[in-house]
Amino acid sequence: MSSTRVALVAGANGIIGRKLISHLRTLDGWEVLGLSRRGGPGSLAVDLLDPAGTRAALAGVGATHLFYAAYQDRPTWAELVAPNVAMLENLLNGLDEGPLEHVSLMQGYKVYGAHLGPFKTPAREADAGQHMPPEFNVDQQKFLERRAAAGGWSWSAIRPSVVGGTTLGNPMNLALVIAVYASISKELGLPLRFPGKPGAYDSLLEMTDAQLLAEGTVWAATSSQNEAFNIANGDLFRWRELWPRLAAYFDLEVASPLQLPLTTVMADKEPLWTEMAAKHGLTASYADVSSWAFGDFVFSWDYDMFADTSKSRRAGFHSYADTEQMFYRLFDEFRRDHVIPGR
Image (cartoon, rainbow, N blue to C red; front, side, top):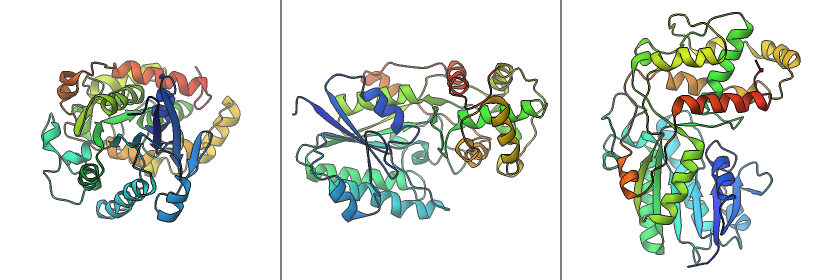
């Protein structure tokens, strides 16, 4: 075992990877290197779909812990499998596995079929992969299990709910969806209507704070072997109860829910956003704050969406977060950074 742990974080510019890197850098005994397609300060620019380029970029890295949170989108569930499994395989092929001790794989509730429709709740870790494929998270884990057995290192699979964070330009940032939707509603003098399916307003949901997720991911990578863990804030909510309180944060009234496909109704709002940016001194482009497809996806869940997190607590991870307060903190950060207008 090395006295200094060397963390390689794949997906360094994402909502999960960026917070994971910042958390690791607060801990003693860690060297941290990020990896993403675009690169950036403290990160390597690597196209994980390029085997030769990946191998060349990773020469001499000597990672003891790989935290894998990379992802490439595709139009269909079936098309997601090949590139996302290939990226993980290419990365491991490019690493010197000699010093490798642990690989952490970031997953999600798709392993339970949550993206397909109503599923067994609370979902437990043993429920994964019990639905008809394709599902790239399941295939990635199967590959990782085989590779770990051959390589002599351990793995963990981390399964968060919807992640709350402040990263811009990310296709899966629900807090940003709500913040920008509310800001535009306010600019137009409109109440804040819940835009999802009627049944989604009353379903039980949970979220995962990106900071909590970072803590749980590092905990699992350093205290467990060959286990999967659901990591979530620890509380449940219904939009019916939370939505009016989020509206109050923005000093907005609430009107009855009205199903509005955000990808459609927000498609023409870039000129308005440009005007708002000039008026309020905003710093982010409309493209960087637009995650409307993900908003439509989450707000379409007219069924319960939560998992059992007791396994991680029994194993020793006892952190939790208040989801309502998480939203307020993230909104405050968006305002501080001039992503959305201030009060």
